[in-house]
Image (cartoon, rainbow, N blue to C red):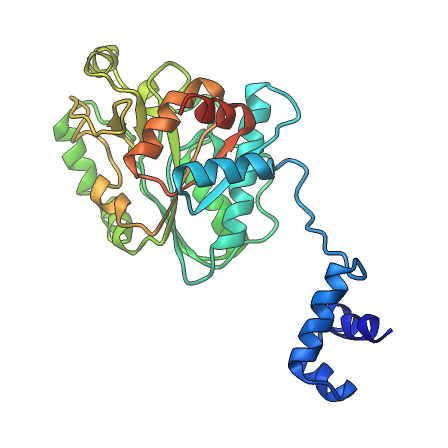
Length: 304
């Protein structure tokens, strides 16, 4: 009975151990032992409720394997690409809701998983949100700017946006866009970013926004150089090494140095066809957190 009364005060009535000790004429250490015994004997049972669409064990394996700060593996209702994208996008949004505070500066890149989600988050911190890559033209009209606005509409924090393509046709065009006031204002916040969300692309049709925006000649040249993955316009080989390609200098967005300086860098991806690209990105150290679907996570672990 004493164990039950002490446990009730502590777990249900939220009293401190000092308060409980004073009430029952016990020491804090006696209260602690009673609470430990209540759990050990089953008088108190602690359950952790996990979302149905999160693969907790698989998330832990992936996190341990690559030494990640954050990892969420989602379980979509089916294997359709739209379901995978929506599942990963919602999980990434939920993770940001958990970790982002009003003191953070959040960077958002051009990525399918955060563009075009049917519902905005139900709550979000009043933080600054910054666009960190240019936009890619899409027939569904969703772009990175809309993804930024989804968070600031709910949280009410300031949004820093700029109108520019993700890939310019030449270096001269890139220099012009980089001199525009909107981009200069965004770029002035790149060194203040504390959290960023970046898409992971594989070098193939339908697997990378940069691949889709590049010319056929640029695609073929990058392919010949061994490009395996693309992250905010940075092209990587299968070992995660940065490759020099004709696209360098034509991307409008955050630099590699600026990205690596961000404390929390969360990569997001869906589709098991991206397993090589995800593995390369993990090897590169460009990200220290990830949100992906179950099939992609299993492929990454099996082939590691």
